[in-house]
Length: 159
Image 1 (tube, rainbow, N blue to C red):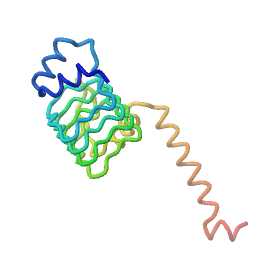
Image 2 (image 1 turned 180 degrees about the vertical axis):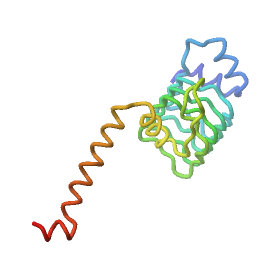
Image 3 (image 1 turned 180 degrees about the horizontal axis):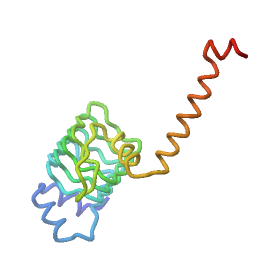
Image 4 (image 1 turned 45 degrees about the vertical axis):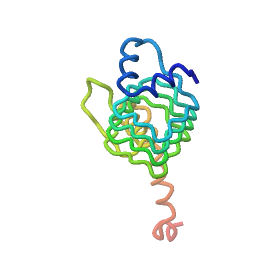
C-alpha cells in the first residue's frame, strides 16, 4: 500500500478526485487499506489496487471502480449503489450484507447496462461481449440436456 495514496483519499473525495485528474497516469495503490465506514461517494477509484482492502460499511454510491483490482476485498455491509464496475477483477470478495444496486457494467460510450450483484456483473458483461463464452455455455447446456434426457422414464424403458 502506498501511504501517500491513502492519505490523499482520507482527505476526502474532492481532494482525491482532483489528485486523480492531475495525476491521470497514476493508479492508487490501496492494497490492504483500512477504509472501514469511509465515505467514498463518487470517488474516482478507477484502476485502483484494492486487493485485501477493508471497505466494510463504506459508502461508495456512484464510485468509479472501473478496472479496479478487488481481489479479496471486504465490502461487507457497504453500499455500492450505482458504482461503475466495468472491467473489475473481483475474486474472493466478501459481500455479506452489501447493497448492490444498479452497478454499471458497461464502459463509457456504450449503452448503460446494470446488474445488482458484483460477481454477476462480470459474468453478464462477458456473456454480452465474448462470443467464445456464449459458445461454451451453449455447448455445455446442449450436452447436459442430452445426458439428462437419457435418464427420463421413457428413455429408461427403451434401454
